[in-house]
Structures are given as C-alpha cells and as structure tokens.
Image (cartoon, rainbow, N blue to C red; front, side, top):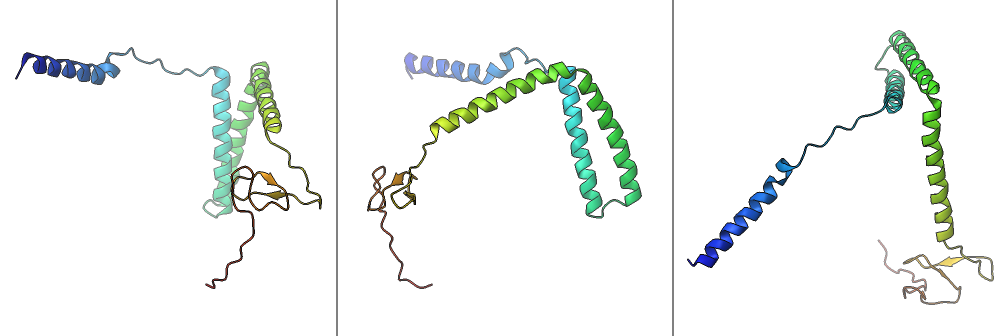
Length: 159
C-alpha cells in the first residue's frame, strides 16, 4: 500500500465518523413550551374529543345510559370551565383567528385568480379534454394543449 491510499482511508474514516457524530455534537434542542392560551385550546380540543367518543360509545351500546349521563355531565363541567378561561383571555385568541381568516381569504383569492373560467361553446355546452382538462371547441378532433384524441371511440368488445 502506498502512503496516498493510507491517507485517503484515514481522511474518509474521519469524514464518516464526523458525519455520524454530528447529532451528538449539536447543542440540545429546547423543549417547545406552550403558553397558557395554547394549553387551554389543547384542553378544549381534548375534552371535545372525549365528549364525541363518549357519545359514540353510548350510541353503539358500549356504555349504559346512567353512566353516560354522569360522565357527560362531568366532561361538560370541565369543558365549560376551560371555555370560560379561554374567553377571559379572548384578545389573545382573536389575534390568531384574525390572521388565520386573512390567510384563508388571500389563499381563496389567489385560487380564484389562478383557475381559468371555461367559455361556453356556441351550443351552450362546454367540452373538455379528458387527458389535461383544457377546454376545446366542439369540432376539434385533438386537444390543442396536449394532443389527446378527442373523438369518441366505441368499444365493440363484450365482457
């Protein structure tokens, strides 16, 4: 073996070992901490899921009626307390919902601008390419966009 091949092997060994050790050498990631409002929203979702599961179990006959009414009343009390706590910090939640509403409106507006409107044909019916979905004229035999054959072919095979 030559000295060059030994050095190449050592360099490759160092590179591979550094690559494998990289996750251990990084600083530890910080835990994601939820604020009080986010915790309350999580509790609300959890309680609503529990209520839905309890109602489903009662409808399927897994839980007797008297147990269902007792557990449902307890869950409703807890959910009411959580909702009141959320309402007391309403200004924090409203800002988040306003941003969500604005984002959804912007997305809907962009989708509306992007989607082409098909013009009706002379007889009032639209015709579209089955391959790419672009609108075509009624007398076209091939799609101008993708070249797909637009003529109807009937199958003579019987199953």
